[in-house]
Image (cartoon, rainbow, N blue to C red):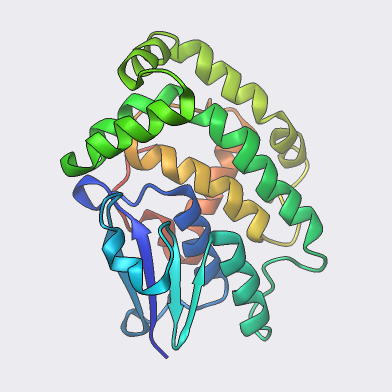
Length: 238
């Protein structure tokens, strides 16, 4: 069966959506990325919503799995868990704890991580998307984009420190085990947090973690999963 993943893409094949990375890793976890002949990755920009208009949806990721169309990274994860029960579980039981981690990443981790890299995002998206990005982020943050990006660039060191503090719950867990979701191996909760780091690494050379940080070591282990699947798109070196 053929699968198609529509995902947000910037310059030079930079797949920088944290939500799309959640879905990529979920597909790999279920063993659905091993055969290149059965999966297609469709690059889409912010302003190419016509590519997914057939689904009556305007955000990425969008997964077409045979005749089934699923939008939204969390909905895709639930779909994959239910559609492929014989493959390794994404949740390892009740979904509530992972759903909490999903909400934490969306409401706390991402808003903190964007601050030191906002200007880098703008520089790495396609030029045709920049007017859209400037306007949409001005509306989201309630301040002119250039003014905010310049302020955050000047405060980058302090903002990186703020991000590291925000990761304390994750860091505490990783001091005693290799994976966020448990001692036996990664699961969707790991992919949620990892997606944020893939987002940053796709578009920014900023070092967000100290090499002595347990989160840094975990990120390296995540990159090695599935024969280095997470390293197959354009990234800045660690």
